[in-house]
Amino acid sequence: MRYFLRLLHSLFYNLGIPGFNMNILPVTAALLLALTAAQKSFAQAASDDSCLNEPAGQVWVNEAEFIMGDNSHYPEEGPAHKVSVRGFWIDAHEVSNAQFATFVDATHYVTVAERIPNPADWPADVPEDFLKPGSVLFTPPEPGQAATNWWSWVPGTDWRHPDGPGSSIRGKDLYPVVHVAYEDAQAYANWAGRSLPTEAQFELAARGKSNAVFPWGGNELAPHGQHQANTWQGNFPMNNNAEDGHQGLAPVGCFGANDYGAYDLIGNVWEWTSNWYYPTHNQDDSNNPTGPTLEQSINSASSAVPEKVIKGGSYLCAENYCLRFRPAAREAQDTGLGTSHIGFRTVKN
Ligand SMILES: [Ca+2]
Ligand SMILES: [Ca+2]
Image 1 (cartoon, rainbow, N blue to C red):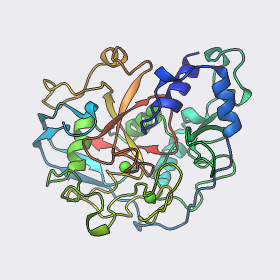
Image 2 (cartoon, helix red, strand yellow):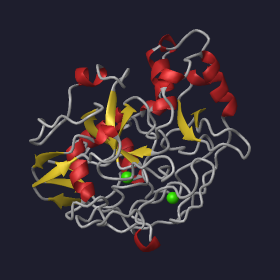
Image 3 (spheres, rainbow, N blue to C red):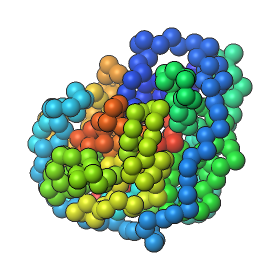
Image 4 (cartoon, helix red, strand yellow):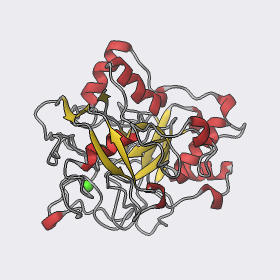
């Protein structure tokens, strides 16, 4: 049952895109059946192109005092408050498929999406597909179809098969790894001798040295019409005109690095942080803040399952729906479920 609730929660409320709320949706097996029926082949317009010639290492972020959060957008970003963060190294880009493959080859690690779900965690009448290893894919509505749901549980979807069974990561060495649950990201970081960033570390790095609304400076998503990050242009979820050159995921490093030398802290994939989620900031947690405890997070109004903070927005963030392609923006994500638009990077403290 725990997994059942977790999945539903994630599908309808908590995939980094607001709009669905468990409070207004019945939690029934019929919903699962509807989801299953809505599944379809999703062949993303992937290409074999790369933007960096080879993986990059880490970049240094100086010790800093900055205003974390924002009082002018979504309420969970407030209160804006002063924090200090000691210097740290952070990966120049999202962890790539090739980097994750090196970890799996060395450790024989099996990700959450590749494990067989435990039937005891599900109701007796659960659809068969939900007892198979899998993950959640973005599946845009067909023309004429109500734009009410765009996530589908697809068995056989995992980091090696990011667009569902039959897809592969061949030619995608430098694409960000996706369908990684929190514990998968943490396992990689442990193996690499590093950590996942705290929310404050991510936000500091994403703000850039100019500490602007966007890491490229200024307050425009696409200054002079030039896109600086892989987001969604058009009317989400129906129309994706890919003005930024990428219909779906982009290889890491396709857009310019910020002034720390880091790429894609905004857009492409959302990224796990080590903070448990709470629907506001605690302004007293200001010295190398690590966020609330698990218990505080679980007891918060929005959280029924363990949730971590994800940052940066993804290629699915559109101006008409999800203004979360900003350093201060944040979202809660069920720790047990990776998706087709969540990845991660690591830090060295
Ligand atoms: Ca795009
Ligand atoms: Ca990113």
